[in-house]
Amino acid sequence: MTLPIFSASDDPGPDFAALLRDRGAAPALDTSVSGHNAVTITHGTTCVAVRYADGVVMAGDRRATSGNLIAHRSIEKVFEADRHSAVAIAGAAGPAVEMVRLFQLQLEHYEKVEGAPLSLEGKANQLSQMLRGNLPAAMSGLAVVPIFAGFDLARNHGRLFEYDITGGRYEESDYAATGSGSLHAETVVKVGFRRELSESDAISLVSESLFQAADADSATGGADTLRGIYPIVATINADGFSRVSDDVVGTAFTAIADRFSDNHGEVDA
Amino acid sequence: MSMPFYVAPEQMMKDRADYARKGIARGRSLVAMTYADGIFICAENPSQSLHKVSEIYDHIAFAGVGKYNEFDQLRIAGVRHADLKGFTYSREDVEARSLANSYAQMLGQTFTHEMKPMEVEILVAEISENPGEEQMFHILYDGTVMDEKRFVVLGGDSESIAALVADGYSEGMSAREALELCRSALAGEERELADSDLEVAMLDRTIGRRNFRRVPDSELATL
Image (cartoon, rainbow over all chains, first blue to last red; front, side, top):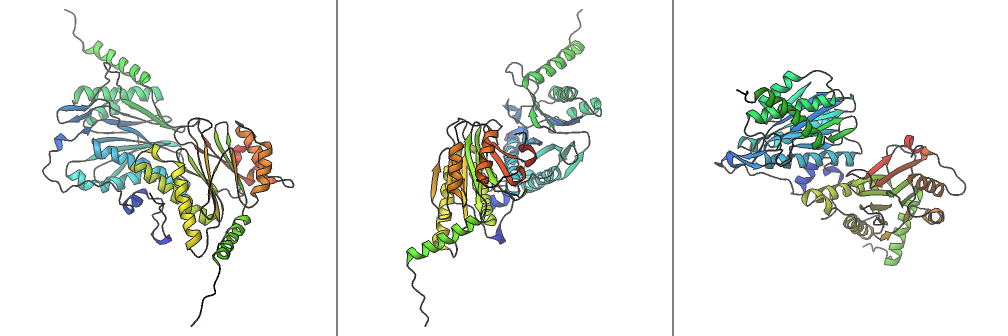
């Protein structure tokens, strides 16, 4: 690999995607292939994000489906985008994971080249542009629909953004959800949401939302106690991104399951 | 018809080297050394925003002295090289040795073929998870690469500064000890350097994935 040196007039600046294109290394999906069956492509499903007192809690289940089959039981859909932001994805797993990888690198590349990180708004906008670039693929069945959340160091509070496949970016003040189970998940969050939730209450709320989504949507996975696989929950606050441990998530799910079976179990005759 | 004057190759190379050395000697110097948690880099630099020391990749840092626009161009090329490589292959395939070789090729090429050599001296430093495996590649304006152990001094007055560092250096120093040694060596016998005259950064193996950490002047007192 030679050293990428540019003349001042065609320097790509801090844009990593432009650099990739220049080097002919940009990932391109061939959307001219028509008639493929979108059902056979692996899909990731439900993710939610909720604002709480110190920032944002984000959660995603671990299931990927391929049609009516479970393709993977432990994929990850919630990613650290950079120190103070996170991205969660639903949709075609292949392009989604690739998009996240490029997004993470784009943020880091910008920060290193410019010597300062992008603003939260700038990061959200970057993701918009990547989604817009994916539109032809989305129209042929490879849609990716992320949620982006972060702690805005300039405003000192958490913010979250929803997207559509065209790159449309919609800032939400309280919560957001995406994926096949999002209808159920969002309803649970909507009913349980209060302003200034504590961290543990916010973790319980997102856990409950995924529990209910998994209960009603076959493409969403719940807590798999048999294999010890739990949904990924992460907090993003002034101290940055951190994964909530499986122990804490497991405890939250056990509490929900106990309550659920108390209320729904068979009544002794 | 005009005839170009004949200049002996030895003379031409010497002139270019003198030119580059003079340019580098106009700037202030920089010291890098291994310390308890990785590699400590300290430059004399009154500017808060025009950095001499920067992050390249997870375990790799860059430092340059001489002409700012020239070493900054090299820094950005390094970031691009590393990020492209990490994206194409994997993060663990990005290493300082290959980057240092690329820099050396480029600087050597410029030195012999271009109108003017680059007036820079650069350092590519890398740490590994294990203490004692630090690498510091010191690259000169003509493409000469030196693989340095323990410590390295970049800049015009490097010999006298290196002598001062050698006197006070020991393996496994704390960040505080490294800072004070760099400060006194850069200042020399007759000067004092305040926190605001220094730029300090380190590759610290005890912090997360991205090991590069810049220490603002305001935090130097409590390092």
